[in-house]
Image (tube, rainbow, N blue to C red; front, top):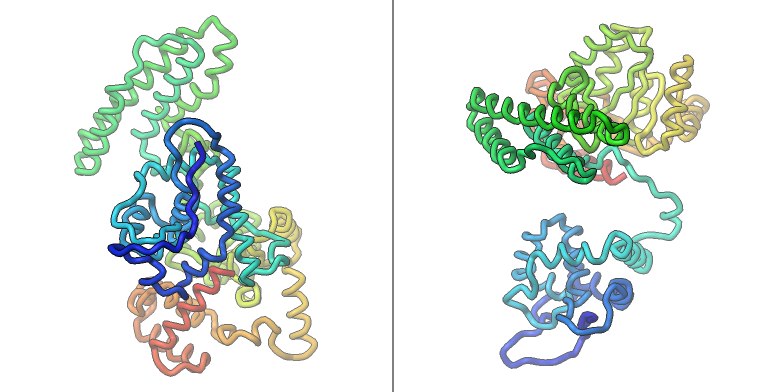
Length: 460
């Protein structure tokens, strides 16, 4: 049965208030609700239903509206349902005419609706979002000529890789594979394995590490028994040996965890080759003697520019290439002055990044055509490059810019002093200079300017 779609009826009720009489019709959600072509979404999502007997589905506008609000405000299904009952603007956006005191659906209905629509049909929400942006003037069609996706900031579906969790998951995968291929095992340890994993996590949380280690040894013992049982059962079958080879090898690595550590059974390509701060990076460079060091501007508790300077002083024969998300108009020239042999943004294509790496390894310098033109203009006219001259932030020194950026990230002056390993008075002196160069008078104006600049940097 098809859903009963909602339509504006204009009805009045003596005991209930219409939403359009109690909310501000100039609110952004009200204007967005009027701009969206709900008929298009009803046709897009209604195609999965058929005419017949059964309970009628929930209205498309309600479910599509909840999906849009959920992703707009980055809410969970539970939080979305709780706020919907309290917020009259959410209810109006989803097609309600009167204020509702109860949720007209169960929380699980949102998950079931998404699963039923599927990925392809849910793309209709993205299509309509782009259409609304074009109709309202928020975006021009030419803006879609090139779409850049920065995969470096997308989260990977990998949980914290505890050994107990990986060992238990390896046992589950082997048991599932054996069941699918018709290999009968003596015991699957499904019930006791799950209980022991929970027990291990409780012991570890309570910092009872001896007991946690005993639970881990039990899980490893059960995984070893499954591995040996499978090897005995498939010893004379070449086909099964081929099917089990990869998983058995992976389970053996997880059980022993010697050599390259396994962090995820479904993404075995994930590796951690090292961790530490800038000082440890310099020590690692001194030990390994690489031909090229690729450095980011934004490092934890350090500055990439300072790392580039230290690298040039301590290891002048090792070239450095800066790979960053920041705009090259502000940071590229600073990186080159610090000693980098090239600057490339993360949003560039893989081909351009590889070109930059090869050029620096060959002894050359890599900069974009845009930056090259700006530097040529500066050389010919004896003036600042266009991109830097137009930005007041470009007048700041490297250290002043670093302090300014940390202010924009919400850090206090004492936290900045601790992170940069300098005194509080030095940080305050940098703030005073930054205020003078930016034409600001108070510390509050400096912080506000830094926050706005940091937000715009992420939007770019």
